[in-house]
Image (tube, rainbow, N blue to C red; front, side):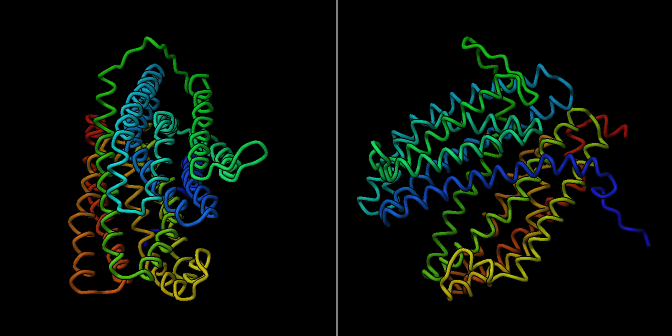
Length: 459
């Protein structure tokens, strides 16, 4: 019998490179998640109405930023492939054009968002005071939408370079500023009056401005392996912009359909009752943290596979892909074991309600069975994106969500009246189906042929 040998164990240099790229990316994702947690925690002391207003306003703002930030995937892929090819000039050109695109798109989105804010918030049918405060929050944060989008696009460029430590460092500073400014501006301190919801919006805005200043210090200062020469008279290069959109729009579409399906899922689960919905939210919070290793490794896979593609190195593409898969499976497999063995202890971190602990704990145990398939799906999607294939992840995610998850959820909840546990079983099957499709696509290697062309045929 052949002895099993893992690539990440056989080749420690590859393991080190993948882990060195993935770990800061994981930390960056966690740090940006904490911004919302801090906002809610501080404003929550003011009462239910301010809390609901900030939660709604932040969901709309960050939802739009996340959607637009998907263009950064295109920038990251082009930067990674240019770096792999050793073309520093192209790296600089793509980075500069990405910066300009972020400013233009961010400004247009801010103007449109401010214009549509009132009718859009009205769709949520919240109390009048919640709507008023949510609009106050939105009007403040949308004014710095170009700042936020530009910051996140610069982060994407550095991820493409494999310098995920720089976005992580920026995210750390953004969190510190956000925490301090939230406390001071929401509650007031010394001569600074308590501004409540407006203070929270101003704090988030200030944190993003500081983050962008720091990002530009790296970006235009020749730091982190990137030197961008930029002039105010510079024009958009439509060839580069077209490639950014070609690679980024499918990811934007994927994110859009995910966001909409998430809202529909919430709408359906609410019919199961308050306890079921609350337990679902607890389990979802646990899952959101558990997928961070998958996010981190997927980001590393996109960067490192993209660089290998740029270098036209078929063997490196295969090694980076396999090494990323092994690391993701190892990390999330361990989380799956923890979820299965200690589900109620994990649920207890988020609530002290005995009923919720029991029910949410059962959902966390079910979630244990999706960890490996989430790892495979996210990492394989990252590998394909690194090779320039952003359409397949969009097709797989959209079909799995809209042809399976949503219809089956509707059937189980509205027709059969089954419990929330069955909904989480659907989630497990959904991720299993996605991973199987991704594995088939990966093993056929058409993605590698398209990326490397004749080099693969010759190899």
